[in-house]
Length: 52
Image 1: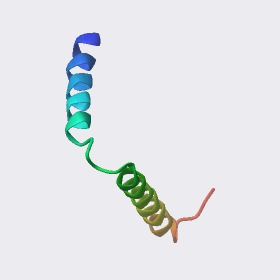
Image 2: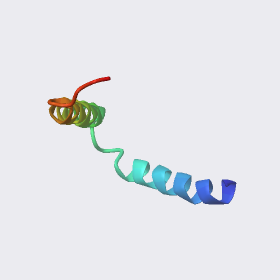
Image 3: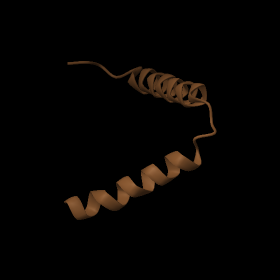
Image 4: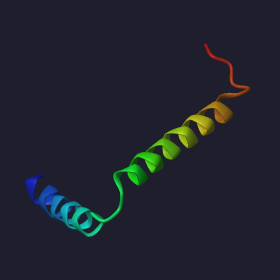
């Protein structure tokens, strides 16, 4: 399992160093947007379905 995770970790670290010029506010804003979008999708998909 470690042989699978180490290359992924290296790729994430490399991408993080390349994107270090981006403001942390953009990451927070994007995360908030994704969470709100998932919430909206959940509410829309949940309408009309009875709960047992």
